[in-house]
Length: 367
Image 1 (cartoon, rainbow, N blue to C red):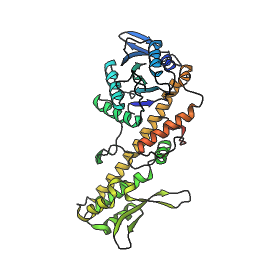
Image 2 (image 1 turned 135 degrees about the vertical axis):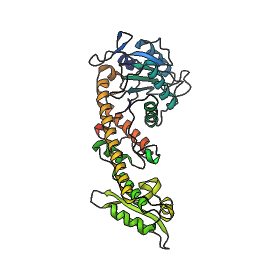
Image 3 (image 1 turned 120 degrees about the vertical axis):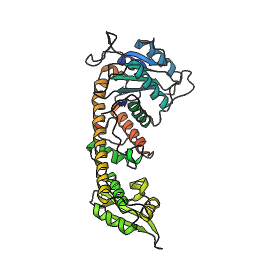
Image 4 (image 1 turned 180 degrees about the vertical axis):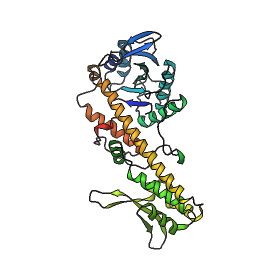
């Protein structure tokens, strides 16, 4: 597990959100102990609206007045919760405050009205007005999920907390989701199984590393040895344009062919040919073992993501099932809105903008 960032649905009612954040919770679980005292409900520990305004009615009214400056903004309330991983040390109010500030800075809304509410030793909530204090701007919150995840990874490192598994670290890549589609991400998170193209990519890299300097013949022999189906893409003139590899089968059982550059950024013909022509080969056994280790690491990472998201779902059930949160919701059709949030998160992970907000993901993919 790692630090969990839960982006809740946007809402219209800051007063309702304030009532929930300062309420006792569904099972009176909102109790925070500090300095020998117990606080029923949340305690404001930072933000830009003044920490002295700790009563829900006060900052809820403040937010409502600010958002009302922009009549056309339907959902001006942004709600985020942050939870430490089980087993991590207890963070101080000051540390949580710094973390909240880093998240707001990363999202580009540090100057907007926002505050951080502590519910317990292990988690806090952030309430944000998308409308600025003077009403002159409205934060779009584009790519918020991706930005928040990046900040969480920095926070884990800087505060010596449990860090998320990063199986692509040896290749220096920013994310293990490279080149996968929304559908692949959804299936991987639903089943916990690694996307097929990721397996193919690692085995192709093993073949490349083991056959470096031996040309196409050596490379193709290694592909056969590691069980990767391939075909060479040659022009009528005889010019080599690269390879395609199979990454699973379709509904009819026919192989799905993918160009090498679609399997991995480093597997396009320009890079691949340079390695095959003049590279220095690695030991075959070592190259293959490295590939299988990476595959196992990525599989473990998907399992960790699946467990994390499942934990977020259970955590949100405790928070979102109360009547106070129902008041925050903007209508009965909250499930379709949640699915739209899931689709947006998947778009940001994969870098694709052509996907339908109504993508039907599995219920276990709450983000």
